Image (cartoon, rainbow, N blue to C red; front, side, top):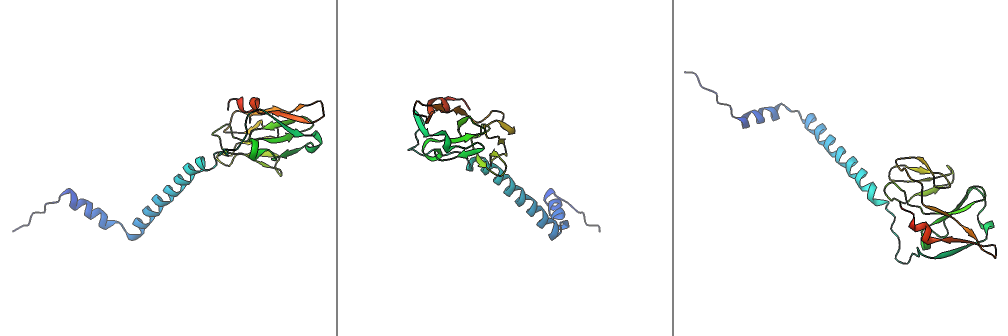
Length: 167
């Protein structure tokens, strides 16, 4: 007498699972885990570096930034960053105020003196000392305004113009 074999779908799944080695299961688990870590890190990086403007930040009106001699050619000053949300840059005589917010997704950019570039940590956009895009994904320059010379020789930045520039 011959015994009939009835295989159900669950028997086939169990057979396939039995054919997987411990190494196969471990490798699949590591692959899925690594993928989750990479994806999670990439997505959280977009949010971590968003510029958080303090409540006491003043972003309207005029700010006197002092004498032009405070800003030698080729320098960037972050003296007004925390209070007014801008840095002062001088490429070669024209002193400007720059908003240090990447025009790609709004992440905070940082001046890297050794590279003479503003660099966005989120997606690696770079900008020159005048805020012009050197390398994307950003397509627009950093918002900037030229500092105006006052009668007493000091410079003034008009924050209403700087913060009115669409990003």
